[in-house]
Length: 172
Image (cartoon, rainbow, N blue to C red; front, top):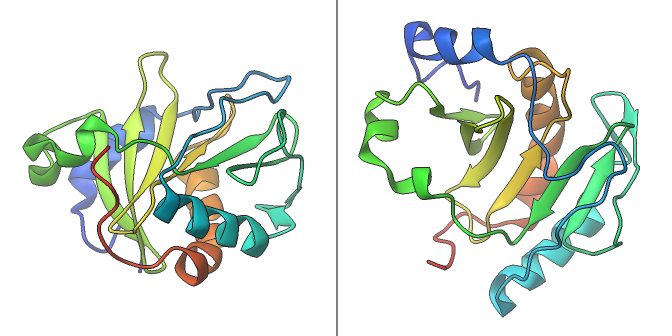
């Protein structure tokens, strides 16, 4: 499923056109805060870690420090994945569901639903929705949320679908 199929382009265009960079909780040194998932999320996050691709949008695996089954990275500067994160507040914001929030867009890519959020520093973060654990992706500065972000989500979709079942994640 394509993110553009379920949302009028008019709602996506303003957010995507201003998105010239993604987000990451890491800087160029590729260090990240490791999530502390609950037991249910921890199991599927470990399954996801084993299923992740060696390359993502043409970038080789480059895991951040500290090494963890709940984080992964590709390229330098790294595209960062964190599994077992806390639900983002905008995930349940009615404005996002109505398409009334210019800083958050919901959509799907190849059978995986995502929330795309613009962060305070102008970068973007993608978080899975409708799965038993939240998986977050951050693009490093300089990567386009529209072009490279869609390619990244497309490359990750098979691994997410294989390892993270559909369902309700914990409410933490």
